[in-house]
Length: 303
View 1: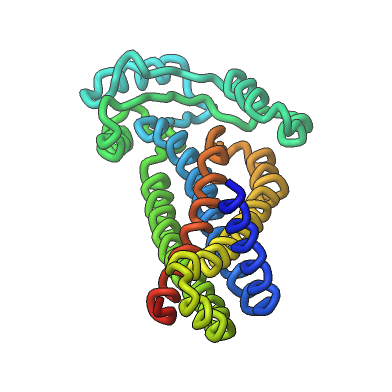
View 2: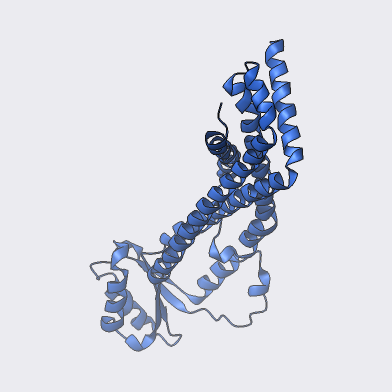
């Protein structure tokens, strides 16, 4: 037990000594590890936030809103309703009418934390409307076109809205964002491993005579390697801790405020995201450091 503790103390002391001697390179390696893992964290949080937004929006993909003129008579409204429930692609049980007063109350409830949006309204600007849901979200475009061309009293239909095209554009932007983020993280992780490798190479070169003496007196290969491995792991670990602190700061000071202030976008972060992300970042830093050390030891240390 005492022998094991002495070895650990020796490895720790050698690691600390090497880090101090190559401080500038060590700081550079730590910074690149922090940047790469920090970008990874931002990409993951951004991906999660926008993914949740798209999931919320996708629930509305099958919805179609038909806005009516204020001049619409009750008989005209009833005729339009009778037509909508007969469209084969529409679920007749999910055709609902919403008058102006109900629409305004729903608007106030949705934005109850932002009363400045509605408290100074003197007249209700929201229209009467029908809302329907198609049996298959893919039929939304066809249903919208059919209503435009075949619905009775077309002069009373002021506008028809659906979310399908907007969501398709969002998904396209989201996919590009994710791909660029992943490529950037991989590139920075490789750079970080190379920098860790360089610091280990410098440490090996500085201690080449000491390593030669240790080999002559019978030190095992792993006894010689462990201080260098611990050096790389230490750089990766410190870099990952810095990245975690930055990611937490961005979440608290930026993302949480965006979620609160842009409630109409329905942005959100999954509750268990950080529980998974933080350990993954720590492991990622250790792996980057260990791989950088392994590369340097394999090429520049013959034991």
